[in-house]
Length: 130
Image (tube, rainbow, N blue to C red):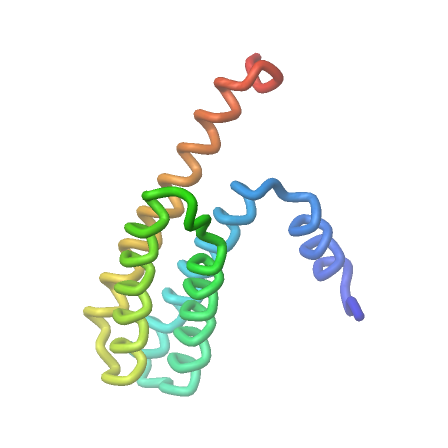
């Protein structure tokens, strides 16, 4: 049950998003939760750290599940996502800010790359040309 107009908007956004937009949303969530986990580490609020880094891990698992094994690049992305999981787990278990920051950097790069790819795809499509 949706409790607020914001939740209804979020649900509608997800339901009407393209696959590329969904991937960007996942990366944005992973970035947000990793940042919150880093903030928890810096404040020594390990409950918040654990909660947020576990959410980031869940998103990376979802990204892994979204890969299409029919493409060669999916194997490489799977390895990268496994490394991201390793970093997030290490950051959480060992309270390692360096590992969390490394994961954050990769997540931001992936998000930005997807955004650029989506812009390029839209500008190259016949309906997206202005």
